[in-house]
Image (tube, rainbow, N blue to C red; front, side, top):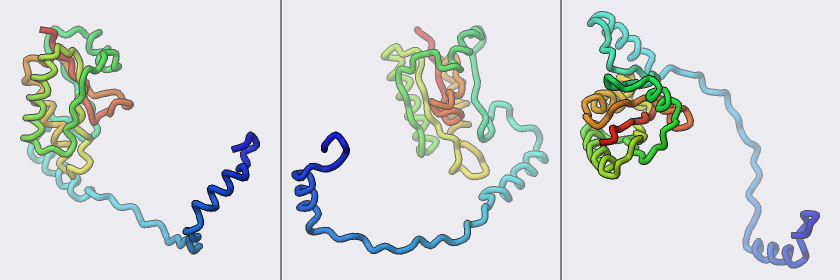
Length: 179
């Protein structure tokens, strides 16, 4: 191409030759209908769930709600360490994506992943659990399960929801003990 963005004679010839067997698409005006009305997909189910929850007592504080961040530190973990984890200051050594897995498959994947990264002496990892948008009114199932599973693991000393650039409330940074 020449400096003033025009095709040279050779480039024009090659282009015309390449286009010999083509024909233009028919031009049809675009039809635009009225915008569909917005609808709340889970509004009724969410109302029923809130009503049931109000009748059965207080929610479990360990169960995160849709959109809530996760946060956990074992006793003795310094606030400065947790602050650095929340700000993404630790280098993430590996990542596990649990999107679309059934609970049991996700638990097995988590167990194998933690065993592998511990063997490699990694200090910080990221686990993507998703935000639970397809979980319906029950909320983010894997997020809730992961919250419980990580609290039970001896090698996990802290975890928190990731920064928005790393998945936000759909992922967690996990800090592992160095032993």
